[in-house]
Length: 187
Image (cartoon, rainbow, N blue to C red; front, side, top):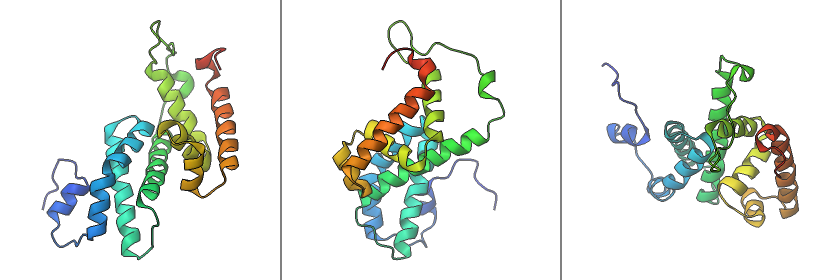
């Protein structure tokens, strides 16, 4: 049978495969958390196609974990962390596929006269985030993209609040250094 030219996603696969038994808990997790997973992935990847890929990947991982009877204490926490990590994986994979060097890209002003951020800054930030260590990227995404405070991040990741603060500080310093050409003298 010839493959359909349309893009398949998790919902269409599950609809086409009636033999797949979907556990009720998984279906409930999908219904309640898919929006959060998509938004998290979209904030990091910057486009909906990649965010949909991340959404599918994350829920397939959740389904696999549940089928292996691996317990997950908190679905929302697991899914948020998985979305961040999968989105960063997409960015890293996209960077390794590039054929043009960063020095060959045209220079653009980072901020317009009315304060609007241009895409060049966003792309530079995405590249800088992809170069972070996984834990740094995860903490940064939870803090500045998801809006969690240090206490919530510490609880989510199972680390101390002081360690979260150290990671946030060091990550901000690293990003500030890497993005200095966009930031100028601004803090």
